[in-house]
Image (cartoon, rainbow, N blue to C red; front, side, top):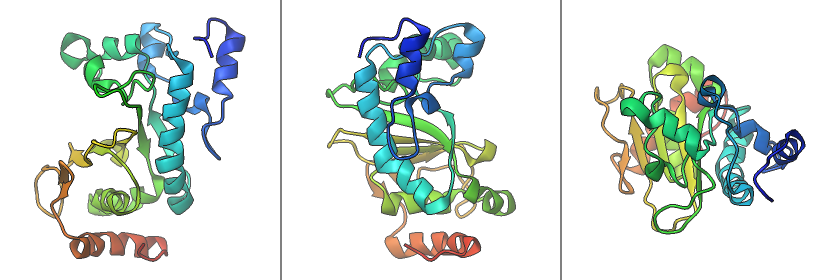
Length: 219
């Protein structure tokens, strides 16, 4: 597929089904694109579609199957959109393009030549627990123990987080945060270079009360 240059072509791209519940159009909205007037359209649609399917099939669908509807806050960024966000000392909280290849910029490969894709999402099933306990870590640990993610990065508003899938077999999982961890009183990474700060039993002890509040068992 060529880069869309007409309304019809862009509509056709948006209709591409990435997984059971997700279509390409779900991931193309961008506030930066809207305000700055920069089209958020992939240069290489086929590559963006392939990366998006990895993200949706491996991560988003299993999350939605388990916890109900998830909300997409931000996902695909065209290079020009991301570059605008990274201007003026990261004015719109975007990393440099080179750091976002195979992340928010789905249609460009990482430095080792692998696909990847990131979406910033909210899981509404977590929000009552987060609002009461200020604790985002149960979902972070559940994902760590159940899904083939590459990275998570958590934010304070709505417990939104960047969730990344990568086709790079050398990528090691990480969980970073801008949100205080109520269990430790700091913002240190839960997982760094593939190494978790807690063992499996400790992780399940954090996950179990949240799952119980939802009426579901520990997996």
